[in-house]
Amino acid sequence: MLGSSQKTNTDMPSPRFASHDLLRLTTRVASMYHERAMGQVQIAEQLGLSQARVSRLLKQAPGLGIVKTTVHIPEGVHADIEQQLEQRYGLDEVIVVEATEAAQTDDELMTRALASSVASYLELIVPTLSVVGVSSWSSTLLAAVNAMRPMSPGETKSIVQVLGGVGLPKAQHSATRLTERLAQLAKAEPVFMLAPGVVATPAAKSALQADPLCHQAMARFGDLSALLMGIGSIPPSRMLRESGNVFTEQDLTELRDAGAVGDVCMRFYDAQGLPVITPFDERVLGIGTDQIRRTRRRVGVAGGRRKFEAVRAALRGGWLSTLITDLHTAERLLAEP
Image (cartoon, rainbow, N blue to C red; front, side):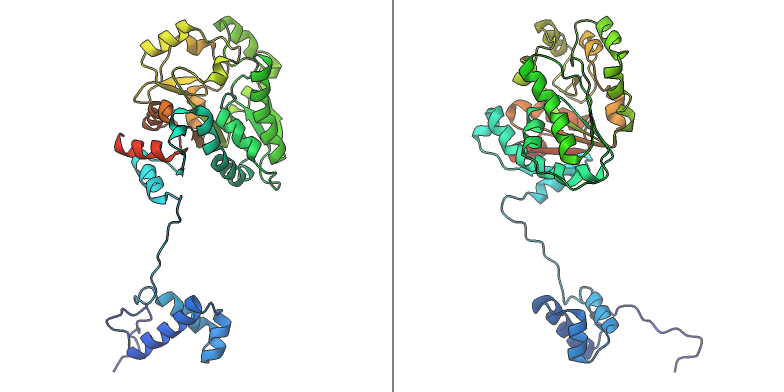
């Protein structure tokens, strides 16, 4: 006989010690709820139980081995690879997109393959962010933004261009379009950086940094909630080569000699992800390495064979917190870390 000072155990019973009647009742309730899609109130009324009792039985069912949760991964979804990459490289999130074999060597096809998934991702996260920075020279980001649908008003106050975008007319339109279009969709203020991304001399950079049209954007770099970036490679993309920005063969030679394999926002790094500093760095007008790293959410977008080394090095160096890439690149990142 229990003494008055003793406590009865009200915790969930184990299958070994649960009575046959309890197992039968729990199974009945679980079947009605999960297989017949009956609500808890309806189950309670039919069985003559309280709703609280029904709720407790449903909570006990998994521990008793009556209910097991199975996740069936649909075709085209690669959650297992995404999770492995997140664990391998310490990322918050990875999104893996299927792309054709031809896209591995064709930048335009890869851009199309990635753009739809990037657009869906941005539609979800942008409304939750206050100040979003965007890199000017990413054809994939531009294609994604062009594919996006208008978003309901959220927390977004500003979309900030973090790298100069002035250049030849066609390229300049693309660079400013990215910031302008995303701001329109998010119902936020666009903050443009009305200057080239790369200038001829450090003196020209200093002069432009003092200009109010540049300063208004640069003053917001420390406020960024997130940074959206394409991942560049050596040599740079056609979009940048045709931009009219000052990017010479000597610059490329110096970067290669210093071990550069890729960049984000024109900040180059080597195969281990370590920053590469050359005279070119002193002519880039945009967000700096330390400011990039201080931004909590750093989203990188790239895919294809040409970008593999640049993507891997960006992950090794901790430049990204989120990666959106294609399946082939994702599998190589696991096989060749």
